[in-house]
Length: 291
Image 1 (cartoon, rainbow, N blue to C red):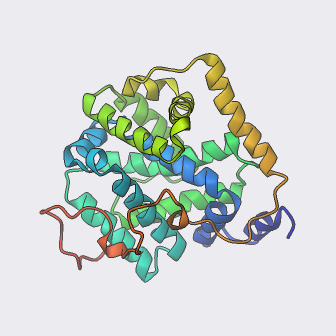
Image 2 (cartoon, helix red, strand yellow):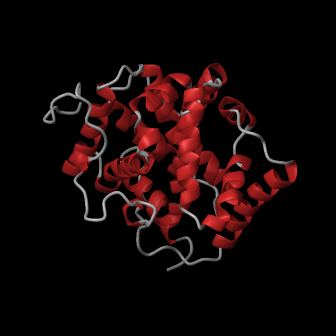
């Protein structure tokens, strides 16, 4: 297989109608590590919006059961993408998200913002650190994918193009990012989980490396100390170097799924999508249909 094998596959697909297949190729073959890191950072950013971070803190889930919440989020999102939004498993995963979200008073604006981070943050990550730049087809497919997912989640006024998602995310963060002790607690718990994925000797370097990748607005919202300019330059430089080296690697022949990663620890015996996540007392009926 040539290095551009999957690029040629994507070039033969229509991003307006085959956006799910393009998204699967990009996520599981072309940039699996990058997408996993970028989506983690996308979710992490949302904690800095107090209305989101406080809710996550108040449920107790993201502070007391951080590993399980991390795993549930990765597995639910993967079920939607890997199996397809129109599949039985994909619809079950969307239904689970709707049931959980429907149990709390979450504004449409917050849901739109979270959706925007899933579109914008991976694009910027791959643009900055990926082994190649995203193609126009990949950008369009990402937009169409999350527009459809947003529709299934009942999110209104979803942007129509990438520029719209970008403007939404940036303006929402500029208006809503703010320090809050509850959002800081959720961020601390998440960083502690991230550090636990590596040998104990690397705990401090990994934590500093993570903060070095955060922009000033995010650091300020969480009250995190910014690492030195040298450390920041080294962190960004190491990721760019990784991308350059990956150009010389052969194309991936097998998909890299989150469910196969060692850091997913909550379900050693397997899982059912319908049982992932939380089940608050006010949760809608399990047989509720998605849009």
